[in-house]
Length: 256
Image (cartoon, rainbow, N blue to C red):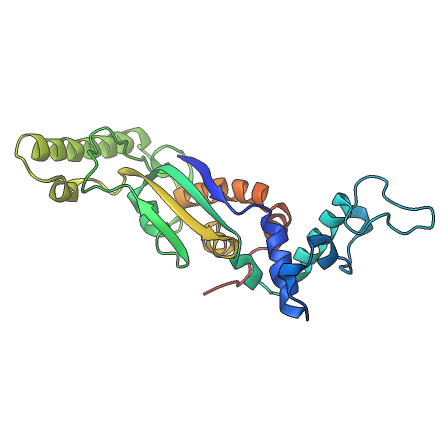
């Protein structure tokens, strides 16, 4: 499985601050410089990097980069702790994901407020696509929602049975398409749910927090937890203050 960011909102946490400030400002925020907009925002001195003080103890500039970042961090944490999640619907990000099973694809596409494009089995030839092997067939000990901690006594035999059955389905697919002229859109019915696909999907920051609330639980299936972890790494780099706070304080009811 691979995850790559295709597009993302630039300066997403500043955008969150601007949107939230606009809720309570008598002025039009489109005409206000960001430093001025955040001028009176309280922050923690410990988050300021570098010596940016005057001798009288006042800050040299309210829009010094380090001070602005400290203000952004404090402002974001205050809004999140109050449950004010609406501003996080403005920044959006688009991911390309390769090598997820149809099982996980079906799970993640259930999430509302996201947009998906999935590799089509109607038009793409799937003869070279890999079949994902479940973690319970590769690990000696594995946790499942159905049975808790699970151990398969004859792990090697079970894995071989799975891989042979999957290969038989792929071979039947090829025979239907190549030897019997069955359209790919009909031959695909025989392919296993473990068949891997690629997809592109987009969402706003709030929708990803909601996804993590559900898909990073210990009871979630291993593959979607793995995908969620890879997404979280990218999102934490994109919006470090927001997703660091979320990681420390999750889960939260932030959407339906």
